[in-house]
Length: 106
Image (tube, rainbow, N blue to C red; front, side, top):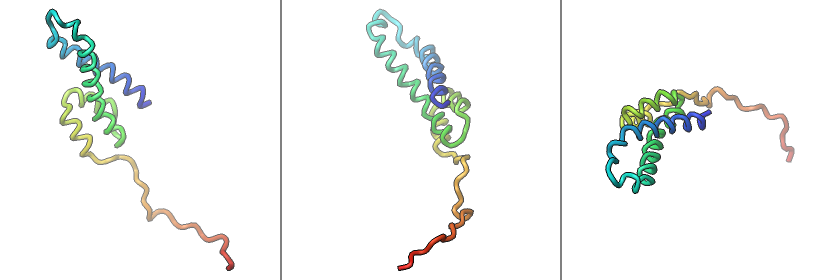
């Protein structure tokens, strides 16, 4: 499921980055540098995936953190790194040792 979310939101980010930066690449040499422009769009779109993936590993909503990352990327990445995990950690005191069923008679 996380792979599908990454692909869908990568496409969304690619479109957002494309529409927001398209005016920066106007002029007669636009098509000469079109490959470089696409690479920059892909790199920026992948950078927007970082806070969402970190938050998803910590048990938060992937989609909400992705939108948060699009709007405020630097704040979202710091927030996703600094927040605590919602996943339950195993408490070693709750586990008891198993009784010995056989013994070595040496």
